[in-house]
Length: 123
Image (cartoon, rainbow, N blue to C red; front, top):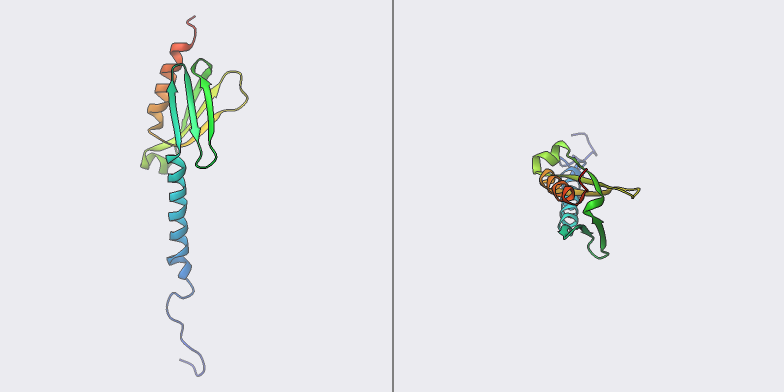
């Protein structure tokens, strides 16, 4: 040790690696879980109802007869944890309904398409 210089304890420069980054990841994961737990898809009669939000609620009702396409997107991480993003395209509307972090998205997509087929006129 040189005269007049104090030795720094190890990892004092990297304290954020030990606390801030893992803490941030935990907060992000908790916020995603809260968002998922306050999102619900329900099929009532001939309508698909999508509810989301914690304090401010959003509800969207879609007639199953208007459902044209249901798409499932899953990242590698989503495949590992068994969730995915669901996108529903309807006739007569400019936008898609997109739902993130849906459990078993392929099963949900197939069920929606199966029920929608019952309301489409046979050719």
